Length: 342
Image (cartoon, rainbow, N blue to C red; front, side, top):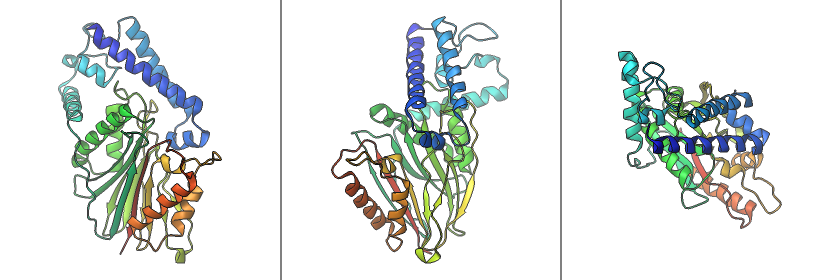
């Protein structure tokens, strides 16, 4: 294998190892619990062990050696999966077709981003606000359609910020947009997305991602939450119910070695408010080093149930500005608000 390819893979693996190790050491326990979903820190340690094995093999120039013919596997395949150890020629016809499909998807990832548009959804008033902490952000939101035409919603956050996270999020968007037309559930997309990225050398950190499927006729919102901040559903005050947090149903993309993701459903009724957000909102810090927090977020939304989605976002932005009182943003901020209009 060419030395330049091996060096590039080593550099990416070292960067990923550093990012995951820093996350283990520095992330607050509550944030770890959210991003891990049903997994635990041992699952991250298993992922780090796989990375260490790959680094050891790379140092010995054994990374990517085929177990059958003892030649090196295709470099493109190795960049997609640094654990690859069998050449395409030695796979069955079915396995080869699956891998070739993955390689084709890899090429699609490199294409330009598709434009973002806010769709017109019967019975749901939508609005969005997004502002990066730097010139290029690591937040992502999108609206798309599943294979059967159902409406999809997405919000995601790459750990970190800056140019590299923005480029990675562009890849996530392209993969999601490529998979959505051939999938019919959030769970299926997240499983395939994680499979595509978790041993990919271009994923040097991890991604939290909330995907939902909305049925306007029934008000049903079926979702899978891969370690993302829990979106919030608030019923009208007249109903007297507590806010509903759409908690993680699995781990973040690329965070653990064994990935499991489930689905859950909530029924939205006329007057209900749905809020999706990234951690730049709840972790916004004031001059006393106090975070904006989930409870303050819920309190703001709870007292604004008469507003449109657009006005709701404006009220939340004003509350955030009042909280940080001129402090610079430490992280990207993205908010999606939806109000059921009946």
